Length: 252
Image (cartoon, rainbow, N blue to C red):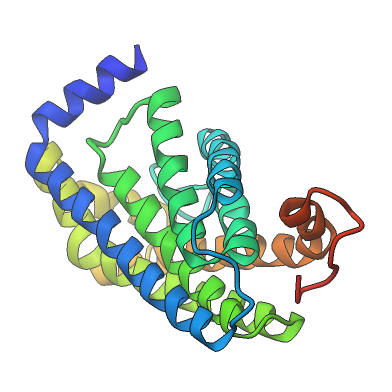
């Protein structure tokens, strides 16, 4: 059922899927460039992709995809804006295996979600989730890759959350909402009306995204960052070395 729905959606939105593919490639190239630069500063760094990393990327991506299916709405925004915890495995994987792994986990997550739940937004929401997720995972894992410590992990999460929030707000106003309106023929006034029903201060698309989208991304980034800081130190030796007796701490 899901695979047929996905193929049907692809055939109807070929140009948008092409843009989506280019976005994925660009994210991977950016991640690769930063990881390569970080590895040059650390001669003991492991390979960007190894057999073990590929296996872990698949596993983390599957977990992330399942978490993506269990999204939920918040009362501060219209119901089509939802919160999920799918970035948690991606951020942990990015810390453990590098920025490329983090982006690939985001990609696998999206594929798993599409197979399990298909798309209800003609890939618009799926691209948004992937790209905005990368805005958290990529900066955080890049900063941590250059210097592995608790301080840089916290800094990476903070920077990633701010970038994700800023980008998510701008991206929704300039591209995502206009694209959604064009693909589905839903008048912008209807979307703004949904926001006004929740917050009377919504008057245009910018006030809509600032009052609806910005808080959700801040909440999501903060929650994912806090959960990552709580669990990463405990699970990283097992993730990377298959045993709790492996190298410990944030430098692992």
